[in-house]
Image (cartoon, rainbow over all chains, first blue to last red; front, side, top):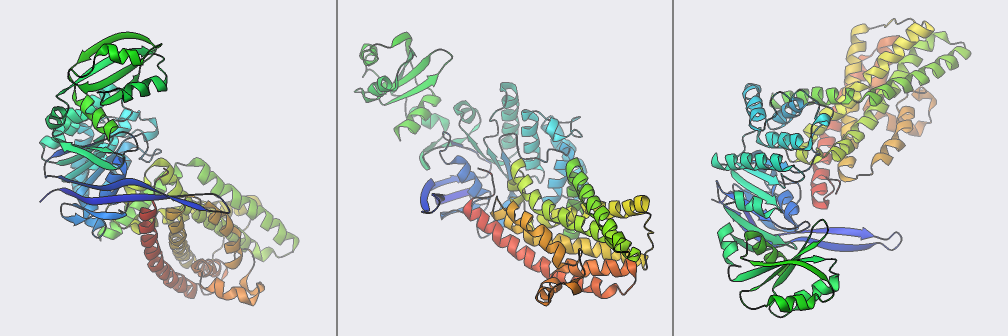
Length: 322
Length: 256
């Protein structure tokens, strides 16, 4: 049995505007997605902001009711059997909100232990273990309002593990963390997977998904555009080359000319401190650098290099080409 | 047993959480003191010194209602702003069992109001604190707090669904003071208001408190307040359950 199953899952939102003449607009956040996560698997849901990752997660953890389709966690339907799903899932989300600020980290953990029905004797053992696991030992009696963002994030992880759930859902857990904090958190997530937990992780950091996940589903505009292991996704762009062009003040119409150039499959733009890095993907040997530079006529260009595609390029290609 | 423990521990947690909000506690003390002072001078001007304890008690009870009203709904919006509403709803117990200890804690904070008005009356105005039935007085206070807590549960349901339900709190403060008879005795109100008063559990709780303190039989009031509280709880948990489902359909649990 799959630990998590989503079948033709749809979620729409209604937005109303206007005062006298109310207008309702329907926004499709998730458009009929299907995926399965096996027991003990670390599965990544990868996509840009607004792709539908968090909406999908919220349907799985029973915070949103799907507009259509079904989802099950360990065989329990997320709508009909929400209480059973809640017992089986540990839900951790990113950001610095999500705890009672005026109380200590320890108080927060005790409170949620009660909500999850953790017996008092087990709490006495479990809470110190989790504080140790997330590196908050010694700081647990301080008010959460004095915690750094990283500490709050680690507190969320501890809270999600209080009832020792078989399925853990992590929604962008490293967002806003400093590099050291993010690396430590990734280490903790890897440990959970090694301990046999089923982990569903959403992120928009490709290297994070690459380092942690057994399989990845790439989601864009509410649809899953690719599923596979990190190696599968890399192979999908193995026959391409990536030309990196350092440009200074390239206008949007020049970038659009590049996108429309024959042989170019995708163009991504990364803003650097004083320059833009244009990442142009094209089939190997199909495009000459000189032709590309011709489309940037009048734009000051710095370093130009060609290289093999990485997993991040595969992701960019999937998201932009769909 | 498990539910009793859940309610007790969550009530204690919420009480601890609310008492750390110094301003909330401060306002729940100051406002009733102002009412108590005004009532004292009004009663004194009317040359009815025997009703001074009634005035002090009523001012305290007004404070308990205010604390329940703003604490119950405010707590849900506070949870929404702090981002804890979603983890609470995503936890296994029905949300009504999580919300009730919270509204009960808000009503319990109102005890500060009652204690401060009685102390204020004793120390500043020399009102003697002689209670006719001290044990029944204590019981009637507990029952009134519980009945207010369940009323807060019923009202709190609207805050799950509507982020702007504060308007409802602002609207309900004064009418409930009037209808439950803490400002003027019910006998002075028009007859058509009486049925409304009778279905409000705090009316009977307040009546029990006044009777226990000033003389009279407090037990019918205690019994009716408890019975109505049980009915409210039944209605409240059903409404909270329905509104929670609706909020999950309409995506109003979070701020964004």
